[in-house]
Length: 331
Image: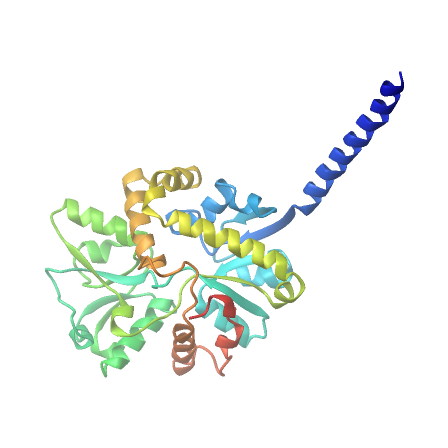
């Protein structure tokens, strides 16, 4: 009986400890909101994998990953407190800084900007920027491709008056009908689809990559607010570590099948062979060499992007964007 009397209180004590431990474990789970720049597809494979394969959960985080759109701007949501982290391109960051936003860049996902131009190699060969003179090209007025192309032409001593410009809308017909020679695309999405379509028709294509000619206009990067960076450095470290581990795994060819399966859950409308080709293209943009860590911030490219925007009057004064880069990933 004495043993029974001792065992009873002991079991109660163990139960209480277990319950308390469970409560503490749950208390450590931090809820965060993460707003992407665009829709769920292969170009956000790392973000999807972080959610689907438990990278966030392993870091004690409950992260709600939300699609983006022109109406759902990540930086605005950071300012309003609707998001803790987001994805934005460098021009968005720079414009926001000029307007007084408090934005911090944590990591640069794309080492090469996916905004490029597709062309048939039977129509033109581009080995020098001067080859663009007189070329029929598509330009999205007010878009990043206009900014980038103006810079490329200026390097060759040309302007938009030295080429034949067609305004771009959501219709590839002018390019498919060969009315336009160069057409702006995202290399890892529309570029894959158009290249595949033309290949089936017996035509081969190339991509005009501005980075090959010295223009590094930075694309998607992970951002947060200055307040979040100051008040919750531990949360930032946990979030970013989990996210970049997921991106590294997503870009590893050995994990291709599980990555494509995870993406398919979110993007059911794209065919599997297209998604595979898109993943291959994304890998070359995010991790162009095995020795490059995912998330590396190219400080010189950010400075160049600001300089281009200032030169073209897209911002009226310098914003010193390099001072807003997290030094942990800067190179």
